[in-house]
Image (cartoon, rainbow, N blue to C red; front, top):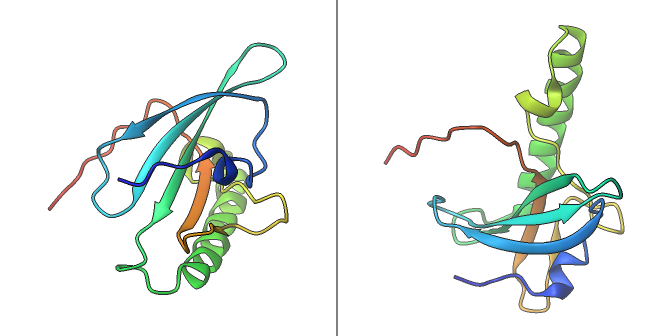
Length: 125
């Protein structure tokens, strides 16, 4: 598994001070890392950083364009219906340049989103 180095982590617009990361071993397609940050009030903020598997997803930039459009639409619908969009759909974190993905020096494509605490995911093969 390719681990993210600091240069990849610095590309995204995270809130707070970086603490550490752990590897999420549950994923089947992408490599996922849970980043731990701390805001100015000492509250923990977690993000999921993923290296997208480009053997499976041949055009990750187009994939992200579609996913961001869908999740932004869902967020609006959830808010309109009185729900909590931070719990009910993903919130992708842009890079420092405003994109929703980053290609590193090795050609790997990375994306990140706010981690949703307390969620149970079921993997089906």
